[in-house]
Image (cartoon, rainbow, N blue to C red):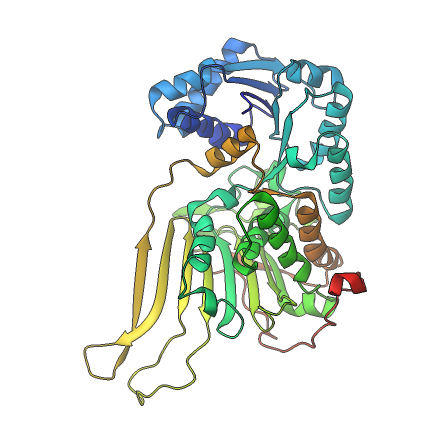
Length: 476
């Protein structure tokens, strides 16, 4: 197990809100011993004392759920070096040593190629690992280039393209619910499931993140990574084991089966929008274009929705809707599996049977099954909901991911070909939006989002079963 972590971007929001509390949780759970060493690297002209004071402050603010002695131990383990992430000499000084090191790039994605190039020149101790946050590249071409750079630095098994959604308890329970329950797995197909909605709607607006968000937008920030990962877990074939190879092979199969969207599909099956001024989450929210640091000419979307279909035996005929939006009227963060209606109701006109919906709540975590039962009057149908409360996780999501990095288990990280396949799915959408094929709608902050498309419900012709780039071998 590696006991040395070097974080580049060590004074940023990601480190303060997630990485430091995760380290404190690991310490409290006994996963980090006294020899653990944290090296923070950033542009600020700080010394070690100032950095440790900053770490203490952030842990008190964001990691108060951890015991005080664990927070103090993490702060005491912290060291600091001022560094230019593109300068091999600076980078070498941070990672220097004989023992392997886990290098965490808590940086804007645009800096990844420069940072990896600097690591090439600096060199890494044998057995080191590298951790990257999403998004992995800006498009398919840049993802491939980044993967080539990484392949020349460390083995694929030592590359951790992390997505903290995969470490959420409820996300893990998606697999547990369908794979460990006889009552669900026989129904987990298009014969019984009409639609799957994967939604991350939030009342939260930009909250000062224009420096990152305005260059990315909702499609790249949420759909291309987090929501596609959830799609993989919902739609994958049962793996032989949950080991990294079996699990990630099945996830790649799902992404390869996604039918590529044509321009016609994109015009009819995607939406993009950005919020106007209004009230959301109990606060007055300015229009997105008036937020500090936003460039209105970029036409950055704060709402993105994409409907996908899979060309597979299990899922042909089921719609997968991926949606994420900011500054909406209510938080809705869930995977909703909508089952088809029963073929016949013997209850006359005494109420209506609603389709069964199995909901995996992401935040807050939980499970709910919406179904229909008999009400107080005989043969009168009434909605019922069965709710399961989740036990609090032993570790926060980032704690689980960091533990996997230290132990060298990449099962919950994104493999290189998986990252490329995710871009293959959404690059046509990005290209079409860049050409304004889909209008940029607007919605008031605090509303339910943009209005539905006027052509909602139209059927489109099926594409060829094979993807354009597929070879006969791919089809076998």
